[in-house]
Amino acid sequence: MDVRYREICAGQDGLGGTLYYSGLGLDRVGGRRTDSEWVAGLLTSPSTQVIPLWRDHCLVRDDTPIRLPLAEARGILDAADDQVLLGLDGEAAVFAADVSRVDRSNAVELATADTVLEVRAMVPTITPDEAGLLAYARGILHWNRNQRFCGACGGPAVPSNGGHLRTCQDCGKLLFPRIEPAVIVLVELPGTPRRCLLGRHAGSGPDRFSTLAGFVEIGESLEDTVRREVAEEAGVTVGTITYQGSQSWPFPSGMMIGFRAEAVSDRIDVDNVEVVEARWFTAAELRSRITDSAVGGPYRVDSIGKVLIDQWLADVE
Image (cartoon, helix red, strand yellow):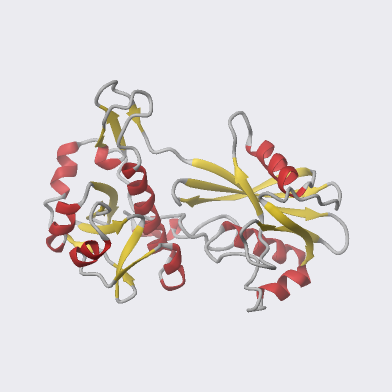
């Protein structure tokens, strides 16, 4: 992978902020992983590295996610149900190995780890590129673990293409990883002072507000989804919709597509199912919340929702 390409890719989002889980500079070698002999050869190369995961959790030593050289990963590879080629980091191949079939203590011992942690829990202490690599590993291993059988006939589905394709042994159906697209939207109310809409979702703590989001349904455009989700969750009708950017969200297989939308009125009528409260916030109110440790801010640092809010605040200034 060209160094300049890695620099261009890392954390780019087009919104002026850093997006985690996107812009990974790893060469995914999509044109070569169909060669089974080449992939098998990588598992004999001394430069190959292996990232072990256990039931969607990273194995961690000294607060650092483990990435083993091949010589130290034989026990992990022998215990793994799935070994997926993530790509090339320079000349070194990087594989993800799923040891979910062993119990937690055995997984920790095999990886010479201290504990297991979720990727998102490590975001404050790892780089965006590391977070993207780990999330990629998590997502592709999750898919393989949950696609052992064909959804059409129930036959066994065996992996190929370095773990990026499974084929039904009975009916021959090709099974590829599927992405679940969702929209995430910052709704603005025209006028002075400018205000934006945030909602408190069911299950969120008191006074915890964030942007609205929802999955795309069959037969919808992205803009259709924005209008439906905002209307369903908050009772707000929107007019103009503008695309802002997208973010990979492999938890387990999402894609977040960010928009800004303009409300036609300030009327709010929450559904009390997904959203239990919604409010219009001024820029001053949002800035106060971001710096208030008791509130904790209106977003998670690794979400595109943060970038949408930060960009809106920058535009209001």
